Length: 181
Image 1 (cartoon, helix red, strand yellow):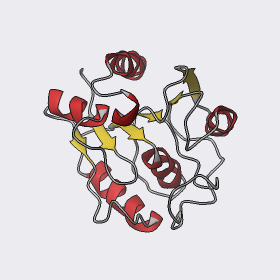
Image 2 (image 1 turned 45 degrees about the horizontal axis):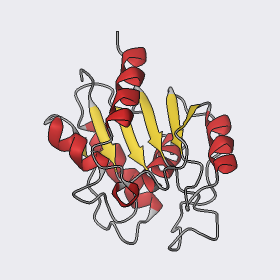
Image 3 (image 1 turned 180 degrees about the horizontal axis):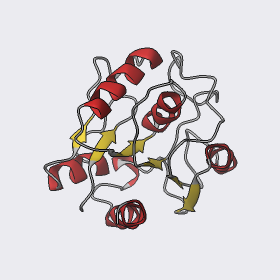
Image 4 (image 1 turned 60 degrees about the vertical axis):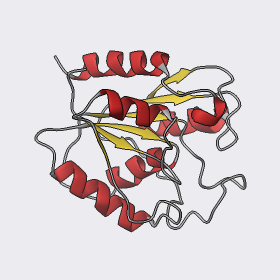
């Protein structure tokens, strides 16, 4: 793939069998944004860590986010940063306002419901325990994102069989082609 990628994992990071980890291993120039604390995320700290990672990029990266990483993208977009990204690929955005969210949201609510200032794609599952399909569509509508529904895929992670996830990689390749000539 010929695009600069920053990987944004969610709560607890993405384990060794997660699609983000597989993709990061496949593309040596892709980088995962590191966080000091994956288990007790603080919005302002995560936003600052993302901003620093974007600043370290040569050009405008594409953000490849999963779960809480999607909410990080929305929070960063409203942070007032002068930095730019080419777009965001947002998989299984967690609803930090829902009772099903597993920890205190630590500043990740309210969820920004304003257009993102860059192209974005939301990939959603019909049976995600951390976001309803209706809510994923509401986020996408508010953010100005295109939505791709992939059926009953749980939280689209290793626990639900999404290890290498070649179909997701194909969706990302298509998204990159639209963004980079």
